[in-house]
Every structure is written in structure tokens, then in C-alpha cells.
Image (cartoon, rainbow, N blue to C red):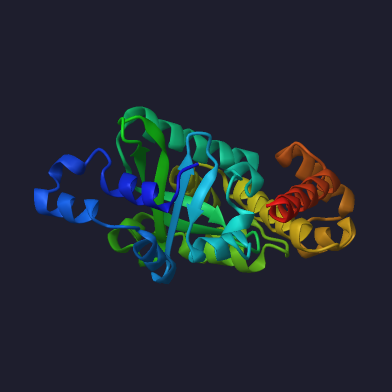
Length: 276
């Protein structure tokens, strides 16, 4: 693992460092510690920062992103990966992007991505990732910054048309949602709505609704001891058996196993803290 000083060095001296003039390089080289500068990331409104190593393990995230993940401290995240917080298909996509950035050595700029919040509701962000290097210019991970899509100006334009439908799903996923009602919200036919939605988000509306519900269920499993029946009713599934089938199909484990694995990982983290 690398410390905050190495992280700051990598962020400032990555592949674009040749564009820095000498006075700037000299100034940065004299910093005793980037700690105060890194702390600024905790005070930027609606800016979400993270850094990961080559294995995809989180090495640093700021306070805003902690809230999105629904955890209280950075210690609960360090050493974990996207697979500990997101659906496998979502984590696979994040991991693939990270590997592409490290392999190519080129930033991924202004990429629109969906990230489940602490309640499991999918929120949309504009993300930029950069590769991180060590002093021998070897890739050691990636760092990224995200900001709310709603505040992203022109980048939002293609998505604006479907914003009411997305908002409706986010606010009403525990209820019955029909494609016809969503299409009417955005003044499109069902076929037009399906086509436009898939072009923008690369999944169908039905898949998106199911993803939102599964994300919400994951949040309930992590943060409550509610029964499967209660979670099913609160996240839009017909009954407990339907919920369990859909959850296992998406997550490759049962809800019970998912909860047990999460509790076990938290217990292990607490034990590590005690041992230290």
C-alpha cells in the first residue's frame, strides 16, 4: 500500500507531468506532506474522489464518497474492492475500466456512470479516471473524480429527455412500475422509450428497475436484520421467493449468504483494528 504522500506525488506527477513547468515541480517537491491538500478533497461539495491499487482495492476515498457507499469511516473501505459494494455486473464494468486506464496509460474523461447510493438507488455521475505511477513509472493503480450528472452542464443534454423517468424509478421502485407509465412521463411511445433508454444506459428499462431494486435490497441486507419478506415488500418484489430468485440470479449468492458474508467481512475488519 502507498501512503498519502505517494498518492499526492502520483496524482501530480503522472503521465501529464511533462507539461508542468519547473517552478511548479520544485514547489511540489518541497511539500513535507500532502495531508492538508488531501483533506481539501473532503470539503469539496458534490465531488467524489477515490484511488485504487492495481488489484482494484480502495486506497483512499473522500468523505462525500463514504456517504454514497453508506459507510462511516475510510477504514471500512480500505482494502475492499467494488465487488464488496456493488452488483457483480457493475463491479465488472468498473474493474474493466480501471484495467483499460492502467493498460493504455490514458485518462478516461467525462464518462457517464451509474453508482448506487447508500439506499441502493442508482445515481448518475460524470467521471474522470487517470492512471497512477510509481517513481519507476510503473502503473500502480488509478484515481478518479466524479461529480453529479445534474450539475454537468452540456454533458447532461442527451440524458435530460429521460430524467423524469429516471427520477420516477428512483422514487417509486418499491411500487409497481410499468413501461407504459414511464414512456408517458417523457412523451415517447414504449418502443421509442425502450430504444432511447438502451442507447443511453446500455441496459433495458426493465433491467434498470431490477438493478435499482437489487441495489436497495443489498443496502437493507447490510444495514438491517429485516426478514426476507420485509425486504421484498420494501424493495418492489412480489414476495420473498421472487426476491430470493432474482437476487441469486443477479448476485450469484442468496440474500442470506450475502448478509453473512458482509457481517463476516465487517467482523474481520474490526478484529484487524483490535490487533493493531
